[in-house]
Image (tube, rainbow, N blue to C red):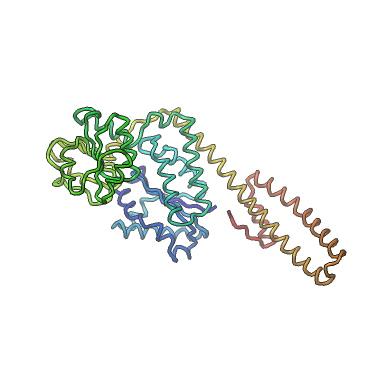
Length: 415
């Protein structure tokens, strides 16, 4: 497996830059399907974009081409985001193979989130894979990687207290809103910008707190259908101003258009939560009288810390799942090597048997000779097969594969 992960997250860059990079990365999958990418050995990709991170996972058949592939990705994002390529390249860390797996398992488990143990990230990991698969075939290695990451997240959720308090970006933001907004949730009107999965999670979080007066506004015209499925209210087209004027809490979850400037905010007391990856509200909105603006940066600063014991347990689970994943990869690789050896040997046998048939025909003598030759080949393959499994258990799969190539010129293709 040759998997690379290009990672830009809140741990190394600010969230504004994360948003800009994500905007520029929206068409990265198409770029990685181009003839240029194909010639460099890119066989598939999955993009994970959240409010805290942008991650691009690729399968690369020719590891020596990592540098030009990186250049291709960074140049595309820079051009789309309007950033200097040097800024883009310096914003990413690059992981390879099992490093990529360990990172993704840690991310999916919520251990890399601004709110440790957040619930949304596991679903975002699953949706990233589903989105990639909807766009076309995804290499088996990437599918296995993301599926095992989702499995790891479930294990962490089942066996630790991480996330048990329902902490999430949305939950912490609503906690902050409680400290500044008037009334209580049962009497507040909430207005949500956006109709994606994040908006759906926000509706669920609001209802958990007793808020039932929930409205959805969409600049793309999808509010009516989205609201009907969730039994909330849709803001009619052209009534955004009135909807904001009547809302106590306004929550941005879309990030799909230019940020609303202060001039688009009705006068009056409002608590605005801007949770979109790329801002729904211009930061200058915070300067308006009677307006409290809560941003992702505010949420990150206010996020509670999980207990050391829970985090340590989660990390042990991630490590255990990493070992299991690595063992599965070794097994797949050694199985591929065994199949390659048998295929090579049977091909030689079939060639020799064809010579026997041509010389002796298909009589009883030829059949007896064929049976004897097949038994001999089966016996000869027994020891190399047993040895292959022993070496795999010892972590020496690469030695076995190298031996096949040196002795027989067999090239083992990874699953």
